[in-house]
Image (cartoon, rainbow, N blue to C red; front, side):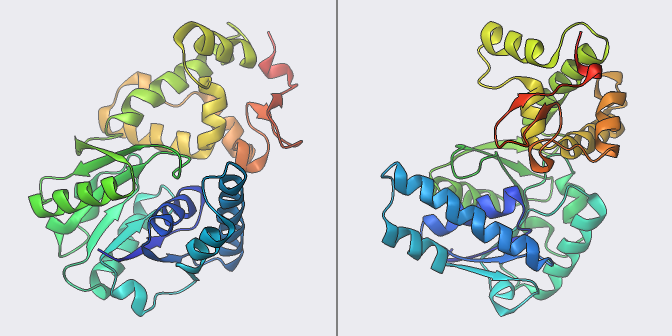
Length: 296
């Protein structure tokens, strides 16, 4: 595999594109929004600058990485002739099915189609194509250039050759692939999201405050980041979407999103990306969110 396409230039998409380009792959990054593409290029450039400061790469290597990424806002022959396409669009089943249906029609028959979905059924996605055996999940972790794990999700249709190629490719990215069967939330989010939801319940019920809850989990459970800060980092809209998929799939109360999470999402307070969530990020760093709802 030499030519990779990534659909969606948001946090995950630009991170995936960065990771492939840094390892020498030719990458086409597609997003319908030119504004999003501009922001993605700036983000990748800034992340590469941090690597230069840490003496991980040189200025010349940065230029080479950026030159390997083509930023486009419509389908082209580079995407059609890709060896692998990784979909990293918004966590909407409708949107993902539409993307895969189109990819199936335009890409060469041997192209593997992967989804970076964090919760949506790979079997359902595969059913939108005529190449079910070549559809697989590649769930990268955020921030993609730094995090080692890739959940490789197989549906009942995914063939062994597709699994092997995906594993081999993940290892070439210096990632550690872990094979997971298709199930709502897979492994990572099936375990993580109920914890985040319970932390929000704990806050909503006035048991403790934002900083206090996160501090308990950091100091008491050796978590590198508290669950409420992590929710902000993931995106509260993404957390809500995943919980809704889990609740719909398992019909269990523990997956039912807390009303406070819904309230924040409806208000547009989505966490780091909007500079406001459980914490205030308006000054570029995490600050305690001074809000009566969040103080005991």
